Image (tube, rainbow, N blue to C red; front, side, top):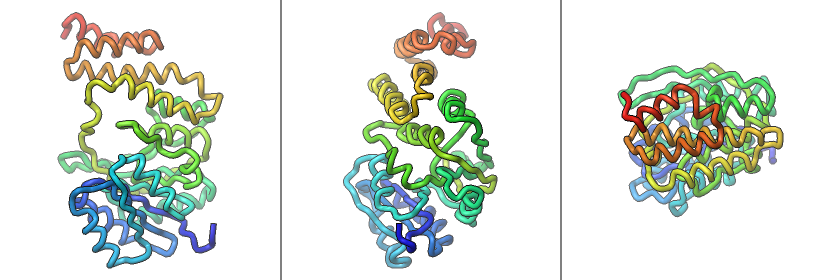
Length: 302
């Protein structure tokens, strides 16, 4: 890598977020420095996204690279942005989020503790639909690779998300985002990084992350296929020591589908998902929280 290459590449995938993109870009422009570049990947937007980007290109010039692609989804946009970036580290900023002042400096400071870290997790402000903000601190990432993967996939005790995290670019090139999944494409990447790279954290808030409903989450008809594909993608890049967790994670995915189906009153789908989970991991499926829900769904208990 040349000496002039930046330390941090901020990659912003966007699709029809022309109305929110200025908020994200303004938060980045305020922190531009010689060691920072910005790559925006427009995923075939049909709104005024490209016009918005043209204005910013005229303002800041070379530090901003714009890639226009045919609509291919978030994973394709992220992969293309990572490939086009030149930085040692990549921050994938969602187009509807924003960096906080001094957020990049907090990440730089965290790297001083481990200049070769594979991932830096920062604190962030979670903003709900009502505009209420809540500080979220990063969870410490300790233990061996198996413990980390178990705590991330099964126990949900390690949280990783975009917009407030740095990832070493060479690792993202080695484990790109799987394309074609309707959701969850970040899980295989995060699990792989937790299993194979060192992680540092900072309790300084790096970004505001805006929460909203995921319209993909409740699509009917493809749930089983998506669950199986996601499990396959996750374990395709995990080391041998972690492979024994596969069946439990598969059951975990079916239990998640079971909860969603039960919540939306789809009794037949809920029954199918619960039976899959019970076959794969009886100890998980027979936990009281799941068993009680299954009884309510199937026997009409309240």
